Length: 171
Image 1 (cartoon, rainbow, N blue to C red):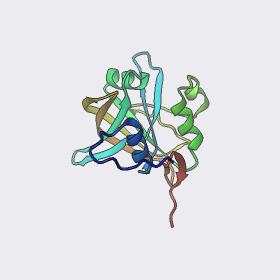
Image 2 (tube, rainbow, N blue to C red):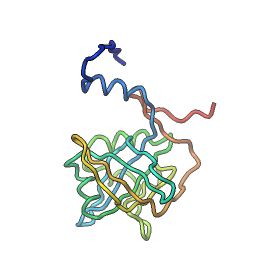
Image 3 (cartoon, one colour):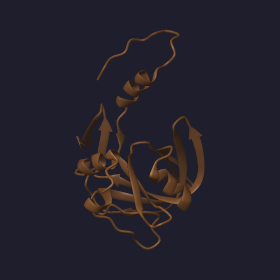
Image 4 (spheres, rainbow, N blue to C red):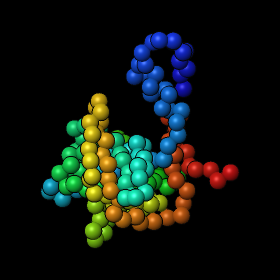
């Protein structure tokens, strides 16, 4: 990790911001949706946040112009697959843009699911209906009212921080 010096009065740069956020560990999820042709779309997302418990709402921040965002906006729904500690390879795969990611990763679409469930790699899945979107820079914040939560595994969550993936440590 690079260290930046404090520059009183200086405007924050993109590099300063990236360094700051690298020091803020977060859980790792894969946001999935089906496009209008039924093709599964998905991308790794560490920008997942709870917003409200009544109604249960979360937000995800998705890169503008991504096929995943397009599918979310077209369908009006999405799934957040919170990855478990053994799913680092899937996190990297869905971050890579590899077009074969859904042919190499087991998934299913349960009845009333918003998008593909990554049945081998997620510990918990949240199916959401789009409630609101908001543009900020090169990303779109999508607020999703959570309509169903499915627990798939008791394995601990996968975390990302300091530009590394790590399992949640119980100690």
